[in-house]
Figure 1 (tube, rainbow, N blue to C red):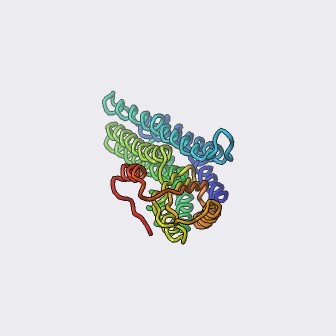
Figure 2 (figure 1 turned 90 degrees about the vertical axis):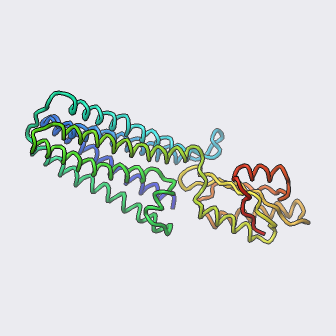
Figure 3 (figure 1 turned 30 degrees about the horizontal axis):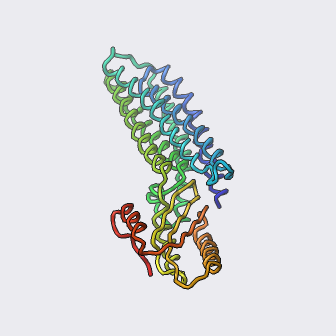
Length: 328
């Protein structure tokens, strides 16, 4: 399943890369022909998106490497690192250039626009190509959210795969940016004032900055070490609480270590009277049951502890700020 999802994510990124590369070249030519700041900003937008896709492909390739001695938990978080760089590239190479073009047009000398029809034609073709890329991303989101029985919106909020989320947001921003550029060129053409062209460029910069912020915040949380999906955490806690040999789940920690990879550490109070050998067999059995219940579990650590230990309780309360739920 994980291999199939990686293949689908790779295809989604490749479709977006091809669309952005083709559109970027055409936008650049159109921007030079028309002299439109908004069109040049859109060219920079496509360049940023192309760099983003290249970084996402790197993320997909490097994050799939198996664990080794130096990285015993694998390389899954590399996907978040490269995706964070992709967000930075959107801001630096896209938003900053758009701001420069926009403000220099608004506050600089009046610019003459020529061959506006070229801009309209290019923007129309770009809208079609970007739409195809966006539909591909939406198709993957709907398929994966349906498999998890979630709404697409909830899936995007909780997903630990930043690649499809990045493509979705950048393609959505691309369509909005194209509409802004079209409006800027049209208003410049109708009024003869380049202010509208510059304003469209500034708005494109704001749009790219917002997308970069949202994607950067998402990947920052995953890099720091975000807990697993709350529904998964509840499922794990409920299963542990139902084990006959378990008196109470004292503490349960999860961390996403990569796309479809979860690290679980559970501190459990077991019934009295178990021998060391019996406890070992119980822990092995529980780990197997949890792995069957949640296939994304990559590593499972179970620690037998007394639930009334004051130091342990203090640490748990300090982390959660309240008494964590216990199941007997």
